[in-house]
Image (cartoon, rainbow, N blue to C red; front, side, top):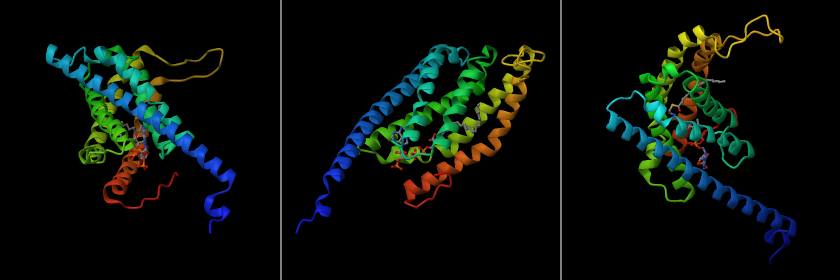
Length: 242
Ligand SMILES: CCCCCCCCCCCCC/C=C/C(=O)SCCNC(=O)CCNC(=O)[C@H](O)C(C)(C)COP(=O)(O)OP(=O)(O)OC[C@H]1O[C@@H](n2cnc3c(N)ncnc32)[C@H](O)[C@@H]1OP(=O)(O)O
């Protein structure tokens, strides 16, 4: 006998319909977003390869790809929003640290200090980010479409073991290279006396940022190791910050 509970009340049905609609809209948006991001980072990869093959040097490469890099990396801010509104099951804090540190590297270090743009370390982190993001966004896309090839899943949850440390090395070496220019120019700094009666030294701020990698990077890395165990080995993992 069909009871009201088995069939669901009118309110329950309406709630379920709303959830399904929200689910469909969110899935459609995420599919579009991930395809756009995969394409963006692929464009970047092709532009870098072409530049290097044509010029035979990494000098000038950053300038050549800067606009595309800035656009797609800044667009990734939406990911913090995705977590905040709950359409992806990821920690806002972990995603926030990851995205903000990248945006900081792009806008407040590499874009702001022209003298360091030809450093090898810049190319290192840009290449590492590009490989990581093509893998990550194509993983999300195929996953949403329920056609995930195993090699993409494998790459998503294995490449970071090498890519994360390499990316961090590239980023830290770049900030280190920026220090003398920041000290000499006094950029983004506020000296006393001033009408706000506040002083800020960007040079020391950058040193604090570099030191903050010591507690923050292991957290991101171990988060990914836990994700790896969960996805590749089916282990149930409890996240502290969730
Ligand atoms: C003011 C400045 C302050 C600066 C402070 C500086 C401190 C810096 C500290 C350290 C900085 C490190 C810098 C490193 C940079 C680099 O990137 S180096 C290159 C290597 N990098 C990586 O390998 C990146 C690895 N990190 C990530 O992948 C993510 O950014 C993450 C947030 C850290 C982890 O990802 P997470 O989403 O938690 O894991 P997943 O397994 O991928 O996803 C979980 C579930 O969520 C779904 N999902 C997530 N996003 C999407 C999406 N866009 N679309 C669809 N679905 C998504 C995913 O499918 C999973 O769902 P379920 O399977 O249902 O669980």
